[in-house]
Amino acid sequence: MKITAHTFMHDFGQMMETITVEMDGAVPAVTPEDFSCTGCFGNIGGSVPCKGVTAVETRDNVLTVTVDPFLYRCNFSVSCEKLGLQVTGNTVDQVCLFHEELFRPCVENGVVYRIYEPNAHGPRPLILFLHGGGACGTDNMQQLTDTLGPIKLAERLPDMYVMAPQAPAGNITMEEMVARNNARHNPFQVIVGEDAPNGEKDRGWVRGYLGKVADLIRRMIDEGKVDPHRVYVTGLSMGGCGTIKMVSVAPDLFAACVPICPSMNGETWPILANFPEVPVYVATSYIDHAVGRHAYIMRAVQQLWDRGRRDVRFTIFTPEELEAYGIGLDPNVPARELYAENHNSWILVYHNEYGILDWMLSHRKQ
Image (tube, rainbow, N blue to C red; front, side):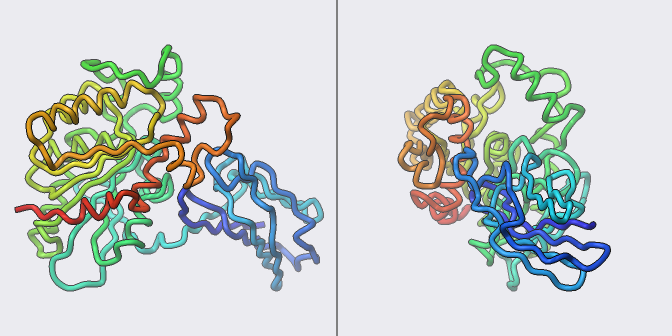
């Protein structure tokens, strides 16, 4: 058998839509009732199970299975005992992503990135998207599939460039870093002035790599592709932290920026507290992994306001606003899992809640 998963990007991430199975011979007659689904959920909290297989079609030796969309994660299973078929994240041979073709894969000057190019003449605006910590690497794919982001922006703003680089993974895996953090009493504690542990200094949005990304954008400006007055940057989680660092690396490049649920550490907090003269809109949930993060963001933003900065905004989404997007629906979920769900505040931003995207795109660099 050759199993292909057909997916698309939705608010909660990459979603399974249909499964095609190429078999050695003719496909026996089967119905949706012959299939069972386990570990298939339609939301990040796992409180909304999918409704299972909704349709089955056979043509020659190809079986097409349509499912009620669910999150594409390795712990799902769609099985049919009658066919001896079990589809999991480990048995899928190929994954097709809807609208992946919009983003051309590139590797240039050591930067791994995807670029959406509008069908337009003359210089166009560009949005730089910086992914979170789970998408580091070199496959030039995870920055599209890890979370809602680049594809959503390209679909929403088809007349603008969308650049989505992939941050280097360094010499430590995500699993190793999570295990190291979990060994601490509070893995999300903000320790201002703390240096990155060995193995993590070259992972993520390091300044040298961000400088190379800035050079790529400058080249596109020089080639007349990108409007030099309308270059923007946004990112989430580690990418929110990266957005803050990116502006400090190239403050002359950006007209405005939107860091979402940005990590606060010994580097990003002092940058935010002394932010360059670039309009910034910080957005996050009412609580996200740890309450201390908001205290540091709020203190930095307040310092900017006290200095007269009127181009600085800060939004904290309420529980009710998050629930409207399917976040935090289960009242019985443990606090730590709820905080992890709340981390997905980028869903609201990329749906333009509070007009945050409109605010960013309204700015022109003088």
